Amino acid sequence: MISQRQKVLEFARSEVQAGRKFPSAKQVSQHMGWANDHSAGDCFMALASQGHLKIKSKRPFGRGFQY
Image (cartoon, rainbow, N blue to C red; front, top):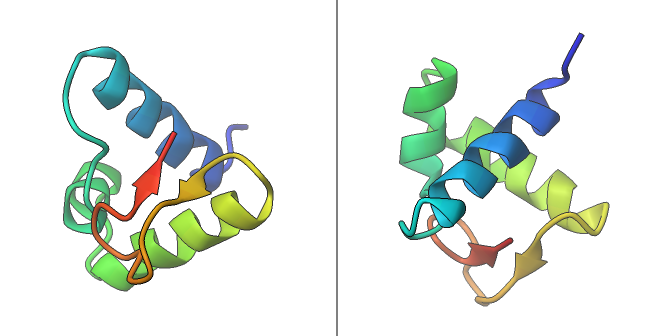
């Protein structure tokens, strides 16, 4: 089974590869069916701590990450 974090990472990759911006926490929450945008932000932070994403902003929630 694919983890939630892996699904988020795959969604972010697909958006970037399609030529779009890195998805916001709101876009990820909508894609994943989550009611709270903070869940996506927490997932971004976990992926960044694992080295899968880079934090590019002092306020990383939203579009403050890059793949």
